[in-house]
Image (tube, rainbow, N blue to C red; front, side):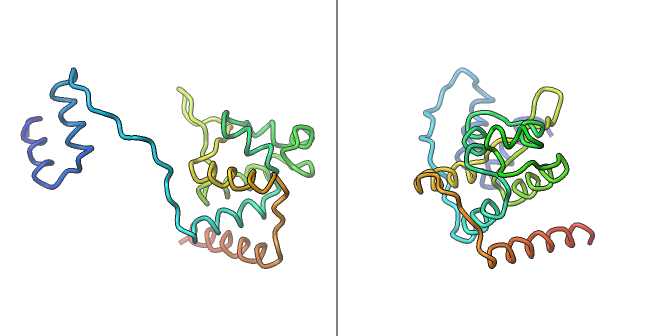
Length: 168
């Protein structure tokens, strides 16, 4: 199947406008198309509650997430006394504990691993969901979001089910 036949097949299968634009750009790379204005992603209330709960139950503080908005933060900068000195954590964390907490925030959609030309790095950045949460946190004047016992229970239950689903 040649390129034109594949393009026609994808168009006949109901390709979206974006796919059609990218197909046109492939056929005629000199053609420009107006870019659409960037819009904030709208997350459901359930997703925002889960993300807020995960942040409340994490050992990390607002300065860490503020730095992650603009640059990647390495695991070594978060773990140990370095994390406390940078005001990223309340108490020193081992690298294993810090990484496990960061991995949970990745699973809840708040963070992502930073990638370089060689592959994954040990640095982390915010996702759009994480950025929205930081904006809300700053709107509260950066006051600490403390977790209730119910938040702790729900977060621990979600993490436990996530782990048990991994072994299935």
